[in-house]
Length: 538
Image 1 (tube, rainbow, N blue to C red):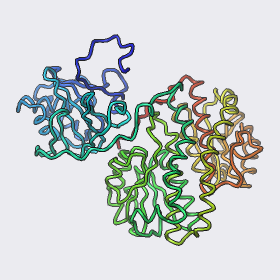
Image 2 (image 1 turned 135 degrees about the vertical axis):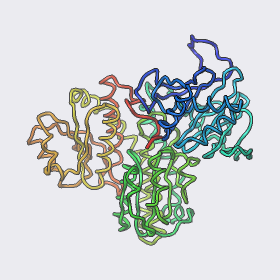
Image 3 (image 1 turned 90 degrees about the horizontal axis):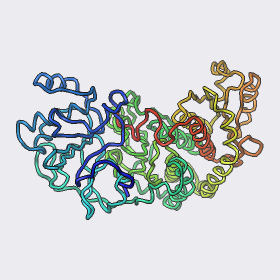
Image 4 (image 1 turned 90 degrees about the vertical axis):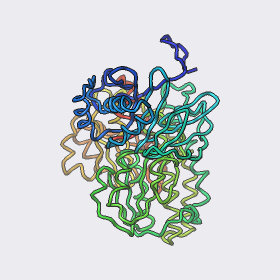
């Protein structure tokens, strides 16, 4: 159970906790949640960022409040304390305090003595569940899946007492929203003999891919997936995302351009607000959690204009899903490790199925062509499994040779390029070493200066004949070339010819490479340095 091996004080039935360090402020025990007020009567945990924390801190300090940290979350606790001293009630104090706050939050505040817990949400996910095992609040369902059948998601502005009531931000009592059923269960998030979540989630990719295909494959060649969304035809596609989700979006965009002749742009979410609105485009916003702040701000910006918004997310009850005109899922199951693995594969497959269906529905791709591509798509789960088996045999020895390398280059051309980007990202996140990706033809325009004797250069080979010349450039300068491709490659996993979505199998290889290197360097592969589970800050 949860308390196996626990040697601390016994719990009295009520409590709050946080599994992350402070994003705002140094990573230290003093800055970690929960934060407390001056008297120690209020304890608070918080996700999000308080934009006017500095001004509130000055006001509160002037009235005698003493702060122990520089963390913005601590300001909330003192502000609630100030309001509670004025009105005498925790929930009313929470409402009054938040009326003065600018920013985002999902918070829980515990009142000593009474054991009351106040909850509030604004721009950050928080859900509650009332069960026979007790009352729960959590930022995502995976945390409480063992005990919960149904749950309710707080809307922006909601203030709730965990066991008694539901109010909006103005303090008016409102009926609670309809409960959602829990899709995940406890064994989905257990290690089941694996040493880490990443290893488990890498191995879950074939099954997860098959699950996504089972849901979508029958609606591709007849255009049904697209038609059921109720969106208008589009002349251009704009992809918005961050990190792994943006890489998946690049794959989806490349396929849409190649097969349908649709102009495609892909924008980093944190820069998307500067784009020019275009009502003739479809905006495809991709976020595993559906709560990535940069993505939410992008789709709420004037740059969206009148263009329809389609969300691709692993969480159909997320904020992004609620903002979108339509939603397409990528049901990968819970992604517990901070570094995305199976969700990348599922985003690619789901997005590919969606765009193939859209191209058929818009008469940009024939049903016959789509049917042939669907046959190839059905083979993906087996291809992922085979790639994993090969990589587990070949990669450990390669990783041993690369442990002392302090920098890595990933190169590819065409459909392989987003996978090179994803491979470099995985290596950065997990090993804390420098890793960059480049179009292979760009090496000679500058990055080749980085290649020295022994410099590891990972080549994601999609069969482009020009790659041979790029590889020769690296070898002439003593670089250590690691090719991921078809038969004859150092890591032979790719199918021939390469599918329109590119060498998806290579992603499995690079996940295993990054994990092996990280473990050899002594790093925690489930909780990489300085990274949080979901991008909750701008």
